[in-house]
Structure formats: structure tokens, C-alpha cells
Length: 111
Image 1 (cartoon, rainbow, N blue to C red):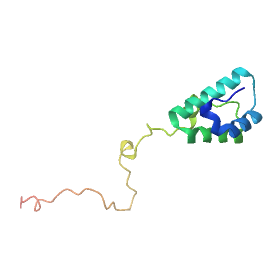
Image 2 (cartoon, helix red, strand yellow; image 1 turned 135 degrees about the vertical axis):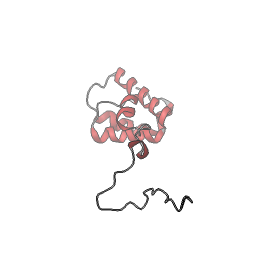
Image 3 (cartoon, rainbow, N blue to C red; image 1 turned 120 degrees about the vertical axis):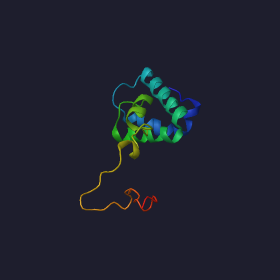
Image 4 (tube, rainbow, N blue to C red; image 1 turned 180 degrees about the vertical axis):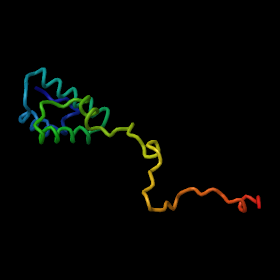
């Protein structure tokens, strides 16, 4: 089975993963692995691809897929931000130095 040219720098990691991986090791599995690694590399870069290979080796995964990376490992861009969760709730007995205080009548020039 041959390595696509784009994966040559990671030959050692790929061989190590292939040696340790569980499950099928036929030609179809090889094509799936190399295809998925190329997809990860293309979409997320070589560093992410190497990280996935290292995690797969350490975790003895059966395979590596772009879908699994994006589902379980990729940083989530849609994580709720603090301000979308509402203002922090004040703790009892602790004054909030940032609390808004309405202006007095004197400050508004009404007195």
C-alpha cells in the first residue's frame, strides 16, 4: 500500500498507527484512513492531522475520520459566550462594585 505524497512527512506515525490499530487492515481500510487523513489535513492543517494520529496511537482507535474529529475534538465555534448566558448573579452580602446606580434627583438637576 502506498502513501499519498502529501502524507509522506507523517509516514512513521501512520505506520505506527496501522501497526497498533484494531479492526480491519485491508486495502479498503487503508484507502479510508489515507483519505480521511488528507481531508483533516486539508481542512484543519498538518498539526491537527498529526495530533489525531498521536491520539489514535495512544488510544488504540480503530480509525480516524474527519467527522469524528469535528464532532469530538475540534474547537467549538458555537460555544455560548458569557454575555449570552445572562449577567452573573450577585452573591448575597457581597456588594457589586460594577452595579449600576440610578442618578439622584440632584444629579439630574431636579432639586
